[in-house]
Amino acid sequence: MNSVSAVMSGIRRQQGPEALYWHDRWLSYPELIRRIDEWKHRLAGWGVGQGTVCAVQGDYSPASCAAIFALIELRAIVVPFTRTAAKHVPEFCRIAGVQCMIILNDDDAADFRRLESGPLPGLLSEFLLQRHPGLVVFSSGSTGVPKGILHDCERVFLKFVEPRQGWRTLLFLLMDHFGGFNTLLATFAYGGSGICLPDRDPATVCRLVSQTGAELMPVTPTFLNFLLTTGAHREYDVSSVRLITYGTEVMLPATLKKIRAAFPNARFKQTYGLSELGVLQSSSAQDDSVWLRVGGPGFETKVVDGVLWVRSAANMVGYLNAASPIEPDGWMCTDDRVELDGENLRFWGRQTDLINVGGQKVYPSEVENVLLEAENVCEASVSGTPHPILGAVVQATVSLCRPEAEELLRERLREFCLGRLDRYKVPMRFSVVASTAQHSQRYKKVHEKQTGKEE
Image 1 (cartoon, rainbow, N blue to C red):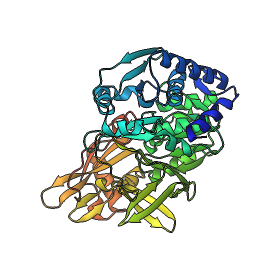
Image 2 (image 1 turned 30 degrees about the vertical axis):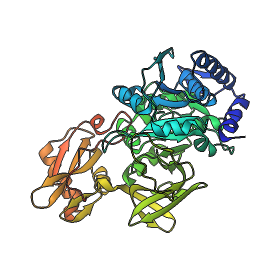
Image 3 (image 1 turned 45 degrees about the horizontal axis):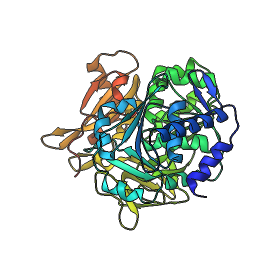
């Protein structure tokens, strides 16, 4: 039996009363399976089947989950979109050769549309010969045009064949990025329960934890820091949370220390993955440590000149609109700067994040961590700004817990940093913004355009 059939058979054997929580009620596994079969029938009636490139636009819901699993069982190519990416959907559809789309509204009603599409991308046409279900997700496009990333679902599902513990899981990471799709698969492959969020505001998240007894929160460090800023965890009973996993960006030790105090019943685990390679198994050195081991069956890692390389058995088929960065021997440079201590790694950020101050290299995360330890600072982001002599200097954007005169704040923060950092790492410029301006809709930190870095 192939991996997709094995995982889907396992899901179909589940009989539990709590598969998916949506609109204040639980959907059982038998009801979810019935909806998957209904979607397979509807899709077949619309002519959707093996090899059809079909997009699903919405958020986690009974319809979106059932439609995605139905498309996978029909061996179609699934292209998930969320509403946050609405303005990019026409371009993404063109890149992926999307032939039809399911658009879901807030009440889970579906609008099925056929699209005018040109010839399929060459890589996708070749892939269809294998008759495997596929998945297309898109890179963030932070360094140019977003790249369409084609995955073979037989590879993606392989890590979910062996049974593991199921959790009541908050479906926080959006399904149109690989981390969110990975959470969706893990939730149901292991017989767990998925909790849909009407929005990802900290108060909503904490309310749903209290309502459902959620056990697992897969989130971002930026969200955890924003949650601390709002104090929402003190307004609701969040004691059911047993595990908080965090990834997609660097975790600052200052944030980790504070969030551990806020969730004393929970364990903490750092995760690591790339859309091109999949999500690696990880093990934090300790709950209070930002050091971790990554790898696991099907993954190999190495560090070359301080940069992490990964070779994965579950890597992507390739980019639909760009050359593949995976070398002929299977290794890919992640662009992530790391520090090694035996088998443990510490992530410092992407190579492109480094700030070159007169030949001296500055990791933004190191400066951000110091700023978060300062009084009255609830969020900080650091980047480089041009300087006529040094090439670049460090600048910082901070958010405050309470109002403070900016001139006094700048002097106070500069003195605070001078006592903890080398002088060239100390920000020369400070600006103050609201906390909400420091993160994207995906709760990832927003940095200003950085310049003056090492090429």
